[in-house]
Image (cartoon, rainbow, N blue to C red):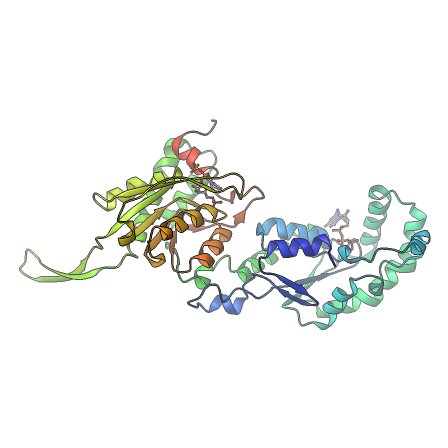
Length: 423
Ligand SMILES: Nc1nc2c(ncn2[C@@H]2O[C@H](COP(=O)(O)OP(=O)(O)OP(=O)(O)O)[C@@H](O)[C@H]2O)c(=O)[nH]1
Ligand SMILES: O=P(O)(O)OC[C@H]1O[C@H](OP(=O)(O)OP(=O)(O)O)[C@H](O)[C@@H]1O
Ligand SMILES: O=c1cc[nH]c(=O)[nH]1
């Protein structure tokens, strides 16, 4: 079963097993997402499988592609039954028009067909286009125009194999469907609802429940307004810096709130005693050059005279992370470290930076990583590897694009903040 679909599935989910019907991947189940645990690595092994069925050319692939595109989540993959056909023997190839591709027994897709009927799916969805005429018309068009087949053969195959197989194997499964999508890819409302549902199941909205060390600052319309401005491609550099600075200041203040404190009493001018707390003394900042440097002023404005170290990581594509430069306080291992970088994308830069801090003797639980926006992928990577590092962010994103840009994101933060973009 070394098909590309299975390879994609294995590649997309680290630690995946594919044996028989048992898939093990990194998808969190809802029940797990609802129960925070202390070990973030323990609770993310359950697969979430959606079975999709429907007549030939009803739009299954189209709908699945649309859902996957909207989800922007590398954890979501399509396992297409078409990838599981047996190779035809030379004898079968000579009589290919007599071969019933639509009968499940003639392909390894049988296991999926059986699974569809007998396994207790997390969720079954079924797609039916408005009627069989539409499907037949689409099939004729696809097979003659795209595959160059003769129309007589297409109709012959339809009446001999496609229609009976639909009646025998597909239509009876309709009663098990949780959702029926009329009009396939044209049904944007149904697709949008399914996308929202999967997002919830994947915990994209609620990563804080999976990872107790992830803190997203409480959103207000002011904060949403600032995000709207910095994400808008039309925003001028001047405004981008102004609103990014405002947001950074909020994130920094929130991050400082996670430092330990000691109780302190003071006498007020009225002669009364006020019982409060004393700020944590042993701390420093570390900025990831260069975007992280945009957060230094806010940290200095909040913590008078704070020491700030620097780390430069060179990034080539997704994998070429390389530590180029570091200058850190000598006594960093005795300090709480506020790690500064406005963007958490794949998490590779953050992993490099945090690994260096740990190598320098900083305890993992003394590191607070401050950023403006975080992609779920980066959160998973950092939280799994360093479950005791705190991440403070102002918004969680939808995901990453194929070239590892944060989506919806705000483009190249460093270029927009420091004015080195082309415009
Ligand atoms: N107009 C229109 N065409 C669609 C729609 N959905 C799918 N199609 C077209 O119908 C054809 C078949 O769609 P697919 O998504 O490949 O259907 P499928 O159910 O995966 O097909 P099989 O793999 O043959 O079972 C393609 O040429 C699509 O472009 C739709 O909602 N409206
Ligand atoms: O999570 P990752 O996928 O590693 O991406 C995040 C990194 O990308 C950005 O820097 P960038 O490489 O754009 O450099 P810059 O700060 O110099 O603009 C950001 O400041 C992070 O360091
Ligand atoms: O989307 C991204 C990803 C990395 N760095 C950025 O500035 N933006």
